[in-house]
Length: 178
Image (cartoon, rainbow, N blue to C red):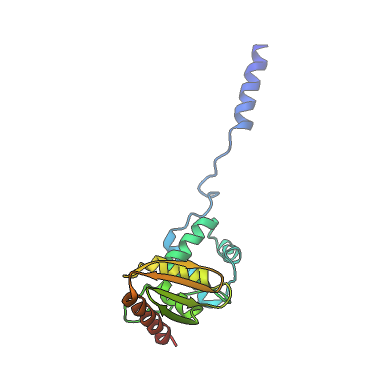
């Protein structure tokens, strides 16, 4: 009986212990810079409409990445989702607007109107969230925050001068890329 217990213990160790991959079997752990470089190359050469599509293309190239990491990569690279899919950030204008804001303004902003300390920003349907988020992340001086609906962003400024300044800055960004 003692032999039988020893045999079961050995069998359990062999079958229950997960095997560890050898170096030859280990999945390719690429660096963040390599992966991000590949993301930029993919977006430079083709229009990808979803993170799932981008994730598949990266996996086919040997870059396994989860959705959270991919979202962080896209955000850090300044990639925005435009009407036709993901778009690379364009070079920002001379003023110090962050590239994400500049790209969002060119992609989504249709008009900007100041009203007291508020700015009403019109976008195509579905564009307000992206523009509002870009404004919030830009942390522009005098901008307290935004509220975004489907096609309208309400930007709250500290006073009417800041509201007018925001309209001029956004209009200048829009013209600089035209």
